Image 1 (tube, rainbow, N blue to C red):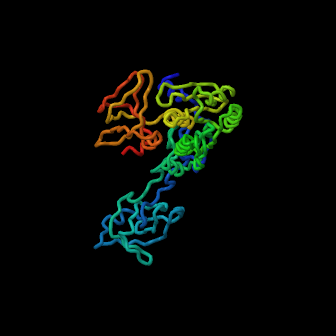
Image 2: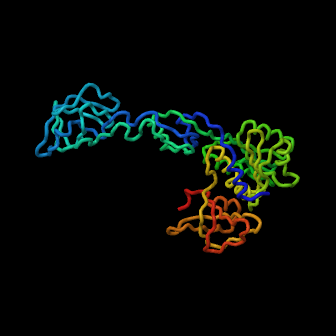
Length: 404
C-alpha cells in the first residue's frame, strides 16, 4: 500500500500515447505534441477594415462636410479579389469592401459613412490619415511564427488560429480508447428493473460521463462473478483499449474476483492499494500495452479513486502534463477529522464568500447524494488528524465551473 503522493508520482510518469497527424476538425481537446508554426501570413495581403474607398491620403487631408473633396472612382474591389492593375493616384479612388485587398498606390481607406457616392465619383467629407482602416499583411499572423507551444490543449480559439495560419493538421496525442467494466452478479443496466438484491451499475455511468467530459466515448459492459469468464472478457477488452477501468472485485472476499482474473492474465502491478479513505482498494497495472485501473465497487470509494487516480491517468495518456485536478487552499466551515496513517478525503461544496474560498461540508445524506452535490474533496493528509473550523485545507476541485 502506497501514499497518495506516491500514487500520483507513478501516474504522472505514465507515457502519453504516440502522436498522430490530426485534422483540425478532429483536434478539439487534444494535446499538440510539438511546436506549431504558421504556414502563411494572415491577412495574406494588406486589406481593408471598412467598406469605403481606397484613396491617396493627402488628397483628403482637409476634407470636411462643408468642404468635401471630390475624387474620380476608377474601380471597385471585394474580399477575395486580387488587387489587379488598377492603381490609385492623386485625385482617384477605388470603391472597396471589408476584407478586400488594398490596391497599389492607395495609402488609406475612408469609411463609407464619410462619403457621398455619385455616378463616377465620390465626395469625401472627412480625412483619413496614412494607414487608416488598413490591416497590414501578416499583422495577425506572420508566416513562420510559432502559434502554438508543445503541450497546448487545443481549444476552439486555437482551431481558428490554426486555420487562419494555413495549418490543416497537426501532430497530437490521440484520445485513448477506454473500456469500462463493472463487475458483480448483482448489477443491472441503468433503466432496467432493479429487483430484490440488485443494484444499478451507477459507477459505470459516472465513469462514462466523466470520460465524456474529456471528449472520450468509452465502451461499457457488465460482467458477472465468474472467474473464467472475467479472465476471458478482460483479455478481450485489453486488446481493443488503451485504458481499461474496472469497477468492483478488488478486495479479498469470495466474490472479489477482479484481481484474481488480472493475476491469471499476468497483469504487471504498478501499485496495489493506496492509503486514502475512501478509495484505498485501487490498483494500477499494465496488461501488454494497456493501462488498467482496478477501482473499488462501493460508490464513494469508486468515485474518489476515479477522480483522483483513474481520470488523471487517462489525461496523462492524452499528453496532459498537469493531469491532476486543481488543488486549492480553502477555508473549512467545520472541523475535519482524519486518520493518522492515511489521507482522508471529505466531500464538500466550495464557493466564494467575497474574495475567499469556503468549503462547506455536506449534510448527512445518502452516499450517492453527497457525490452528486459535491464539487470538491477536502484533504487531510497523512499525519494530520484534525483541521479546525476556519483553518485552511488543501482541497481538490472536481468541478471548477461550479465554484461560484
